[in-house]
Image 1 (spheres, rainbow, N blue to C red):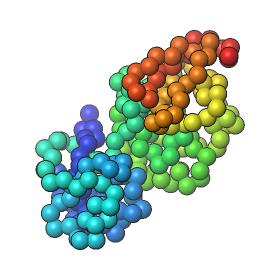
Image 2: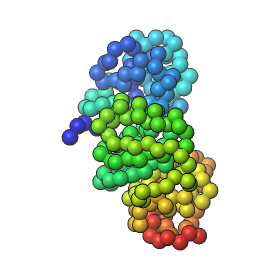
Image 3: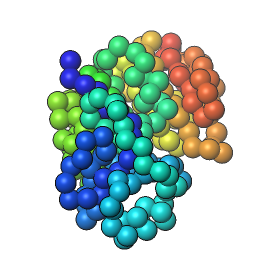
Image 4: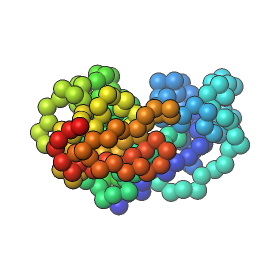
Amino acid sequence: MKPRLNESILWNAGPHEQLGSVWIPWEEAPRRIAEFPPPGSELALVSGALDEARAWAASRWKLVEAVQSDAGGPLRLWKPSAAARWIAEHAPSRVVDLGCGQGRDAVFLADLGWEVVAIDHLSECRELVENLRLRYAPEGRIQVRIGDVKDLLLAEPYPYVLASRLHLKGLLEVLQPWTEFEGFAAIEVAPNKQGPESNSAWEITPLSDGLWAAQLLGFCGG
């Protein structure tokens, strides 16, 4: 089995790859912003980084002293969502990522052997997801579909559905056609947003702040 992705905080902005760091050349950094951690997170730079790269990073992240990573396998600066990490605790299967954005969760799961369908309404997401997959999970299986999650036609529902920060009214009713009977939806909401509303078709289990697992056990809304 190939080594899986490991998290790192060490960014190499230079012109050449360096063991133990994540290499994103400075001139590519602004257009590869999806590969960086959330604003305000800790980030370290390999020594010798250009002043402009350091200033750019300091305006977005908390710069800390560089610590070389001793983790084996490919490294990444970004983290998957809590919802994606919960799904990853299960044996790899099929999963649909609704509102995939730039594809971090889809790539994370594909790297672990999941068969992923990634959905978003923005056409540019197709290229963004594919670029991220090629860099971080070249053997991963991701199918990108562009369209509204309420309107796309399904060939079949999925055993796992990922809904990270998909803030839609009547969310569980939207997720129901995507989900197999007795399948699970991992639902994560942004801070200060409400969680899923009660629905008789679903058994909802709170996992942590802002994170729920919902199992589809019926087919009547309400």
